Length: 339
Image 1 (cartoon, rainbow, N blue to C red):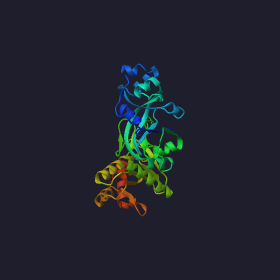
Image 2: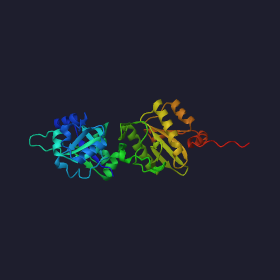
Image 3: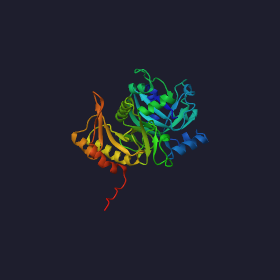
């Protein structure tokens, strides 16, 4: 189970200075000043995760030793400050080394050392207000995250789900089954609408909100949304009903470029649907232009969008067009006509 660290990073002059020194810029840990302070196993772990010899670092004081006892590579850290999550990272090498920490972050006179040190294998900018983070964890709306925290279990999973964060340890491996059902909390890997550098995936905040809302909308109507892994990535939502399977792709905006992206991704995922796709649905925060809805309908794809009165409204393609296109969705060659 992935843990989620919440780390204040912009509240005091000291933490802002630390951010500038070891997050805004990478540290060359092969420099003799740093290298001479590393134990052999610490050096080996850093070199394995950061072969270029440079990494971003953060740390924690002895007051947090108990909290950090089980933190490992692949856990997620949310850097907070000024009433929002400023960035999201993935923990790399983590170790305790006071001398190394004090070189990175010289402590105040009489102040504690940031002796628990961890590198970041990835860092993604974010802009999540505290109100949304508090809602995901179940805290009061005004909680301002004054100190470092480590969330585990249901609370950690809720944060990963609500903000559609995928650490690399949750991505399917090449040896995984070509197609398999995923629990809803397992997040997608290859798609547009997120920001990714090397390992960590953080979906656009607006898109994550839309998926969260529609998932609850479906749950209220007795429908369970899941996902499936396939060679193309992980679907946004996959719903099985008495009529058949529905594959759903969400977009953070309803302009023509996002409509085209939804179409392409649905056609990419559809042949891998665990059960033959009966419906393909593009999900938007507002209704696309009529021409774009018609564009989706030509391929038999339904359009669903937020509706102030009913939560969400479906603009269905014609049953004839859906039936015509199901052969295309499946990716199977057409059956030759009998002579």
